[in-house]
Length: 367
Image 1 (cartoon, rainbow, N blue to C red):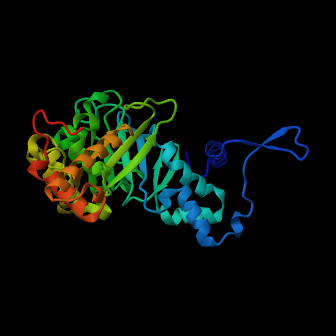
Image 2 (tube, rainbow, N blue to C red):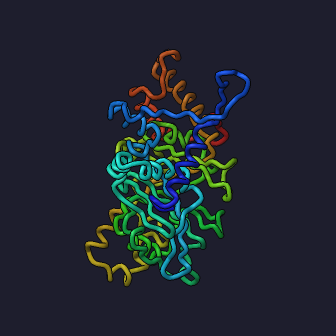
Image 3 (tube, rainbow, N blue to C red):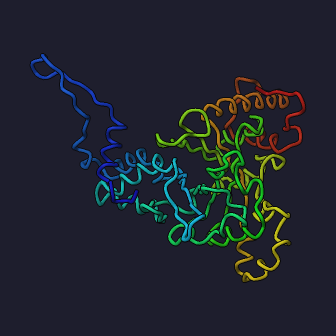
């Protein structure tokens, strides 16, 4: 799945996927001919208008983050990183942009300045913004059965934002970082990702009340729809999965107030999400690291990521609406004046979500 290799087939597939065949009558009107819509005068449009069209086609050229899903086989040396089930869909537009012509390629390279190299190709991305999901083939936290994680040049040295998904062999376990890791093995994972700044702990929406997930439907969060390739099964209903995680580049402070610490990790230290409550049990391995390395690992933060079916968002929005009604009543507002995304109301929602009054009491239901 390289940038250039199979580019013609990528463009061909994208064209057929995004434009249905239409029919038209010929001059005599006695038969119909299949045709595909074209716009040969596109290059005559002003450059800025062309750029806006390309941004619509490929939102990753602007501010929309990519979620890049990979498998990693840690049972072999060197480790093998291969495309995951959700990699094809989000990267198709950018791969097409890289292959169409020099102008579109330049747009893509400027917007996506970084690269991830894996077994089978290279993907362009923006490391400070985009999220890399790594799914081991086997449980990655048992040092008796799995060899230590090792660097994969061109891949592990390019990741800033990381999620480690549940291993294929044990999907019911959930995110390894969410349940903790043996400290020594956790340190090795942090070491092999030298640019790592944020670990997102993946959780399932089934484990939380919609009101506790209100932040997922607010503009402080990213929402990315992932579509699995046909040969893979999706852990949620249908073939689509929605990932929701806080937008830390633009709304970090708001996220610290909106996301309940009682339910989710908020700006937590990555070492606190390992077994044994930190690195005391790994003194020998920890003290062998340089001060620069220990300082870097201590700066790695942990935030939540929710995986859900796309049908969950309406339930969350309904919970927000009910919260707004309650806030309107408390503040003497008229129902017709309310808007969940208006600044003052949003501030109230954020404060309410973060307050003890915002928690769901026993037997209470908001939906």
